[in-house]
Image 1 (cartoon, rainbow, N blue to C red):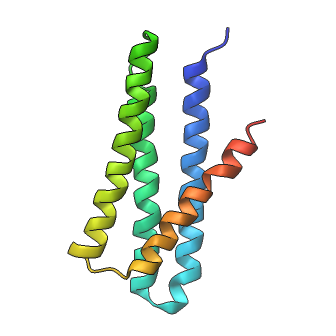
Image 2: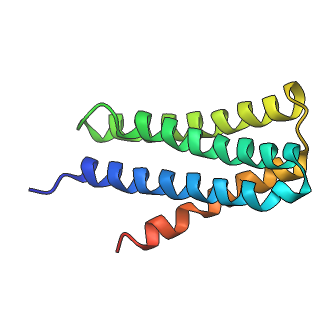
Length: 122
């Protein structure tokens, strides 16, 4: 029997693991420039990892429903994902006063890291 929700959860989980690994590597690569830069890179990538987890829980949680419910969950999950990224970036910039460029590098690295997880699914 084919379970599309299970396959979606596996793919999303794989992407989250790739994103977390890429964030850790990027943070280590930035470490020679300073601890604050490495921390900013980790926070930026961590924002994307946390957002992907939130999105997965909302979009793929709740079981099988009608098409309207599924679409609403997907849209709500995507909105929650970008709200999570925005809130963590705002905290990083304003509250914690982390440098902006390493923060954005972390976001970029974690976002791009989801691609290999999807390509290797085939």
